[in-house]
Length: 496
Image 1 (cartoon, one colour):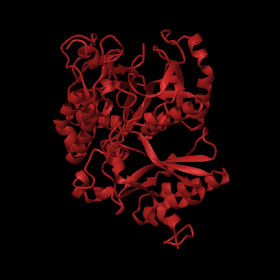
Image 2: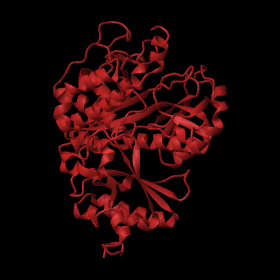
Image 3: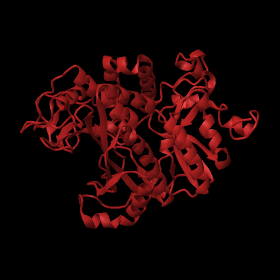
Image 4: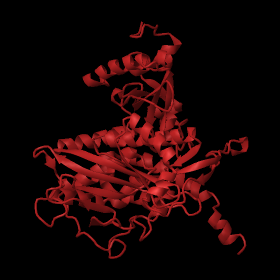
């Protein structure tokens, strides 16, 4: 018999994973084990019907299964099976690797034949979803059936980067500032002919006209929907700080209080899913795509605010001591490391083809590898100064579609490299769209080339992960290049 009282041959027990998998492989800490007992009791006392087991794939998209409440405890303790082909999907959900060949295209026996991996819940992430009656939610990491961690799991990659940073004497503190669009859902395109791969995009309309940045009247126009979002996001426990009206039509921005460690990335994957699900239920379409192909739309960015806490001194390691300085020596070295690997890092901060259409001069978005003091045109913006415990670096290069685990891991990996090698940052610029600073990659193709040749990322993340990511993203690029675009039709159809 299992812990839950079912036979090892019971099909319900078998469907949720290997019996006693978590305990057998020692995958929980004592704290997680205690929390598991608490959330099992809470799920029962709250009368939940179902719990969603969610895992963030390489794109930061949540995938998983919903377990009926009578199988919830077993899924917690046994793991919950998923097919390994989910690791091999590009953004069209097509499998980009030959999984039916020996090694599955990964040179790993575990990746052959679309076999199983197991989701193991992190009990600390358990939530009750306020918009979905009777529904709980928990975030998971993934393991192969022999208990080996899946090396392509991006949440694990960030956790390992945080461990290296902790060993160097620092904690990572970060906060979200995310822009996105909310649009009316005029036609969801649910006829059979629209069930392509990927599906036909819905027809949408704007919910405010834009071009009145931060005006109260314009924000009040959409406040009935914002009230729903505010109430449900705070009920989730997300550390919401502000709702703001952005400049473009139907564009809004959310900011969040900072968190230490994995918290910010976990918040981001839950935020995107929550906003999209809540809006859809209310008859809206929310999109974190950087630059939608709609009239008068503005690009959306994800500005990542970050600093380090120094274990030894118990202070913000970026806060300078000398008047007139923007950052401490540690902060400058961290900045130098990010700048040195900026081109390769764009695969992590700006992983879509669409995201590079945001890098335009004079648009409050960066187009070159530079930093400045409170300058919103630079890639990195230093905020704070002597005596300011909130001193931080704001990276303005990212897009809201980025996988948050990889985005944040890229900052830690390159920033820590700058500290360890005592790299010198260039002088701050007051001319973010001029000067001789290197330009950011002009396309995802350019960024992939930079990552392919980046020795730091290959050393820290390993050749297998880098080749994995390059294969996934090059499949996306290949599909894009094989499609005939509206631009090509306009440019050539009548001319030749």
